[in-house]
Amino acid sequence: QVQLVESGGGLVQPGGSLRLSCAASGFSFGNYPMSWYRQAPEKERELVAYITSGGTRTNYVDSVKGRFTISRDNVKNTVYLQMNSLKPDDTAVYYCYLKLGLNSYWGQGTQVTVSS
Image (cartoon, rainbow, N blue to C red):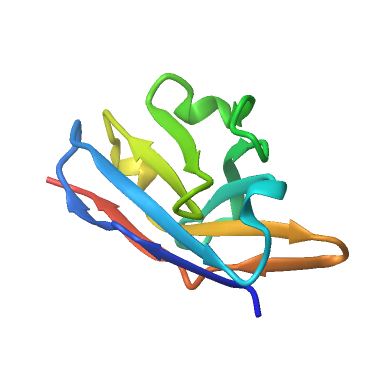
């Protein structure tokens, strides 16, 4: 069965960096686009970054452009989110997401807290 397991979250000061990882299994990882979403307290879940199956194209929400980078390793079946110049507004639970046919799959989420 499909599994998405995020890791790498934590507490970081403003201006700091974190790298999130999402280890995927149970499907042909290299054949599917992957995304990162986030949900802050009392806010809607929002798409943060998207990467095509081959990793050649990426898209980002405007608020993270120039600071976050999504990438993937199709040998390790892992997608990453490198987050630099973090701001308090980046505080949220970050989720890995896969759309596979008619089904949507989410990881369990990893908490990112940006605070001094």
